[in-house]
Image 1: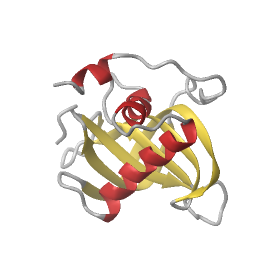
Image 2: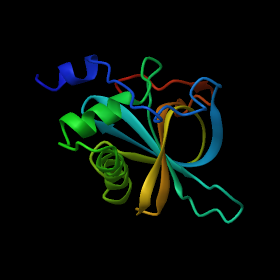
Image 3: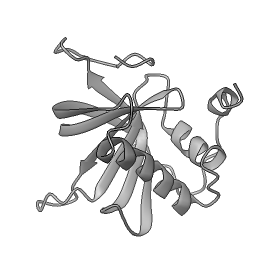
Image 4: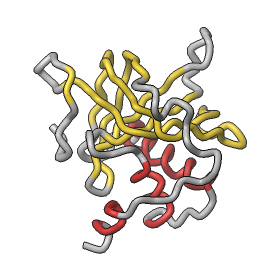
Length: 159
């Protein structure tokens, strides 16, 4: 399959795209997480708020796989989505996450009240509000295995 080679190459980070949180451990949260398949990846989408209003203006889209770092999403946006600029790529990533949540894409699942830990690789500020998001965080995410109660990485093939 032609797309399989896309995920094996490592993209080059653009100057200023690497998050300051990338090497500092995880960001924890509890809330609604949408888990969905995307070109052989298991992806999780949730939101965060930058203040007490709880607007969810920060989109967190991450690959659920211990071997991933989230750059796979940016590579798919460029190669599969045909997006060249970083702003377009970020919007493509958020569109895929929103599609899974709002349209209930095949294989997607909403998990309300889920405890998660994200390891952020990129923090990207959008040049204007998009799908109620000002910022996109990408990386990898750990989720509890359904029914197990323990926090583990979800296997790469899903649940």
